[in-house]
Length: 125
Ligand SMILES: [Ca+2]
View 1 (tube, rainbow, N blue to C red):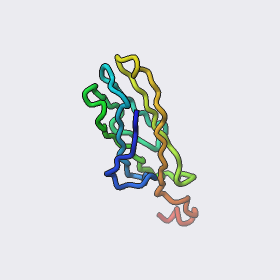
View 2 (view 1 turned 30 degrees about the vertical axis):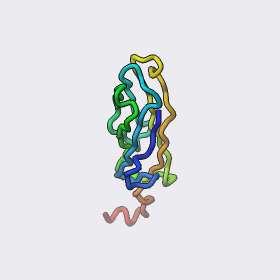
View 3 (view 1 turned 180 degrees about the vertical axis):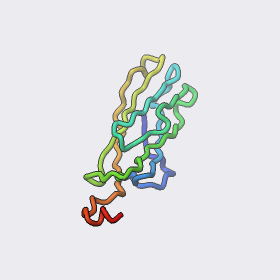
View 4 (view 1 turned 135 degrees about the horizontal axis):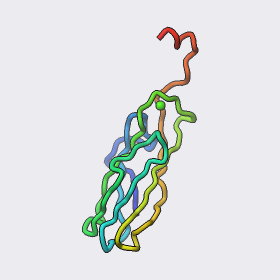
């Protein structure tokens, strides 16, 4: 399993809040049958689209696109940027590609919310 940031994607490695970064994956070798790659956000601050990618034997060496988003919220996150990760799990009828946990995809997220304002200012909103 090879995973990289989409080289055509303009965002830096730290994903700004409310934005996403494009990633791509492909297999290292040809499978005997379809391989399903499940992508699971391990933190509430990130979401993955799609959550599942099916790689056919014919397309094993082609890049398959997915995105990891830094979810927009009103919560101040510290530290900033902060780390999050996405789990990668493979299943297939080919035992060489079945029940395999690949290394997590580690990302850094930039928060766009500022620290808690003084209470007097907060009440006037
Ligand atoms: Ca935030």
